[in-house]
Image 1 (cartoon, rainbow, N blue to C red):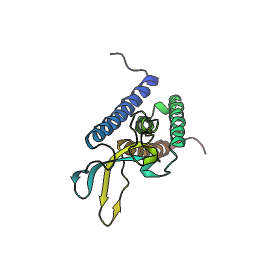
Image 2: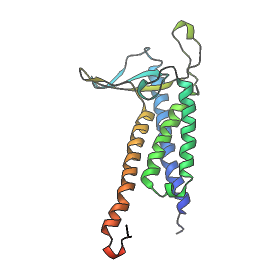
Image 3: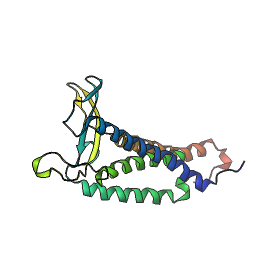
Length: 197
């Protein structure tokens, strides 16, 4: 059986993570907005009251509502980030690290899911306030609300946000693992096989 060349295997893993991630994000957002409509037009769906509910929200900022009104800037940063990720993967040494490739795939899926919204591709229009009625929505569609009454009321988020956070955590772990493995190999080597310091 023919083996996948190493330089292709990294790209295949990246695509196998990124494409389902962005698809899950876009499908889930389309479903919940079709079900509940624009923010404030329907009652939230209670999944685990009062902790977890589904409700629509439009975010013109960044992750978890930060930087409201800077959507165009965040869209530009997203494009640059994807270009940077592709550049990182173009280095063969990066593609050999499956953990790092998985992390970059999740991050890319998250970036693309939210970038799709920031570009106005869902073709939603504002119904309020009056001065924005009919204007195309250039905002991220959020729909997951987590709250611990009296403790925390987390900003409404979506699956793309989850992929970004999980991917970033994986990237940190992959980086730490990459730093510790060479030392572990050095310590395990026979004394006469260790490089002189």
